[in-house]
Length: 301
Image (cartoon, rainbow, N blue to C red; front, side, top):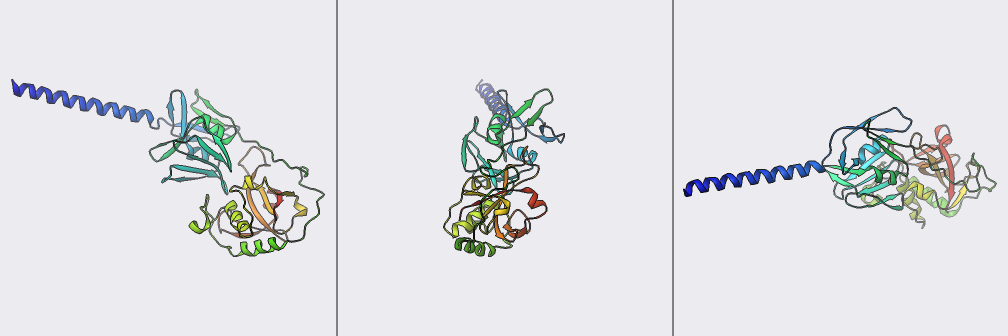
């Protein structure tokens, strides 16, 4: 009898362990990525595949796939479970389990905190819409996420559509001369998206390079190109002076061609020292494609 009772107890214990295991597994599956869905931008026939999670009627997708859809660079820091999205410099930052995100240097509170699922950072579609500042729509019938192009015209202040103004060109200031000489010391320094400060990374992206150079002459700049474009005195193409920051749009990134996507330092004679990829920090002539992409300059020295 005792042996039979012990055998029964063992069977019930095993069954309980099995049920608990199945329950835990089901709970994990509820939080995991599910079937493949489609991602596309409005007005573009190109379609991306993506894993997703559907929880309580809300759709979550990997932030990395959203970045790829918009032709952005994406950098995930696993130690912090945080990601940065942008083109030549960081534009959007978000982190797991935090509703606080940022657009450039501006904070935004997301509807839902992003979550780490496996090794991927997932973001809920309503929160993605908040971050990108553009509608993000879920088409349940076609199982497709549709992102509208972002449009945000740059305020030109005294400039007209072509960027001309009546300001007189300024002579090169001593600080500008010092900044340019200092910047040239870094020619060939590698480009790295979302680069940490130079002392730690030995690399730059476009706005961190400007930060580093201007800090050398006592001027603190914000971190992103878009934030840097909001300070200083606006300068038109034909009024640029050495030491001016110069801003460019990035083709194919936005619905508008008037949104800042990149920054460099004007050094005179229609030349810019900047970094955006290979070969790292380099001097580029402001003609051809760069001339077409030019938006405006800003004078902060």
